View (cartoon, rainbow, N blue to C red):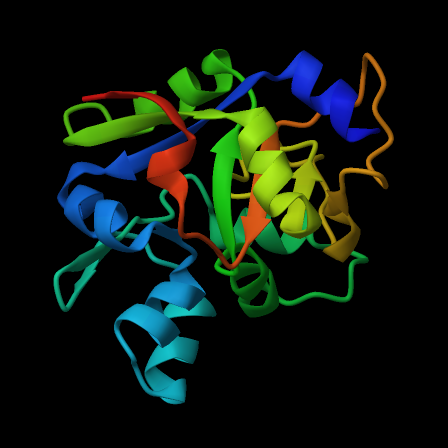
Length: 196
């Protein structure tokens, strides 16, 4: 897939943020859980590893920052989804926590949002062209919801995340998630709009 096709198919992408984190996002940008631990909270290696390599059944508050729970991810089902990948659940959590996630369309966002009904959230609608221009070298696409295990046949491995150029787009193989490795410090400059 080339960058132009990605932008034409998905001119905007969506991030669901915990409303409690909005002030931090405005000041520091969107940071992966790993980046939050290391560069913002300056946690020790042990504390960081504990957060980013284990399942969060509930949201976790750490020094004023809320780490979203991983309710859609069932660990016993995850073992089945990782079958043959050579990855442990801890390694999969680590892979997820290295990324900032965006949904490629509103329908997927709404399905995710339904899990968090009643929780104060902010929806960030982001200009894909600007995001790709500034962070394209760190963007990886995934054809499934990598943080959920509702579909037991959605096998996953390190190859589930592909660079834009390596993603083999077809009508039956479309990106569900756009992820950015590390952080998007300039997220406010990339916003189309913000919805409470």
